[in-house]
Length: 118
Image 1 (spheres, rainbow, N blue to C red):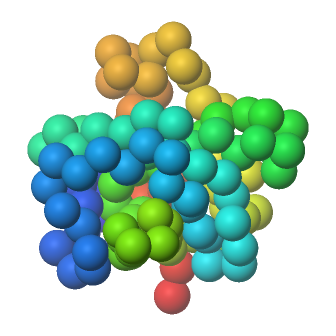
Image 2 (image 1 turned 30 degrees about the horizontal axis):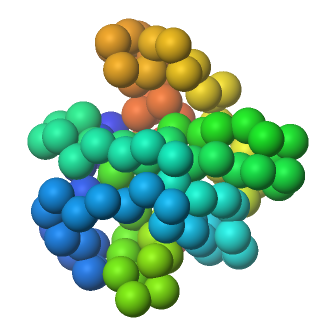
């Protein structure tokens, strides 16, 4: 499943291609985890960078697009299919290499691909 983890699922509700998601609140299964600081909708490499604020002491997390289940443009919220603990336990965000390091993407993709819910 990791091959598709970097693409938005076809059943993602409310997602509009090219939409600016910066500032949207991100909701895990069990509550809010922060706001989108950066995002990409590049085919096969789409992701969200979420600023967790005080929740994980100001850290950022990288969420592959495959974790997104829905977008509510009116409420400016994005819903993801993982709980807070799964997101907190993810590989540490590498802000300097998250774009150009295929090994890092593989590590994050493998983590989220193997931590499927349901």
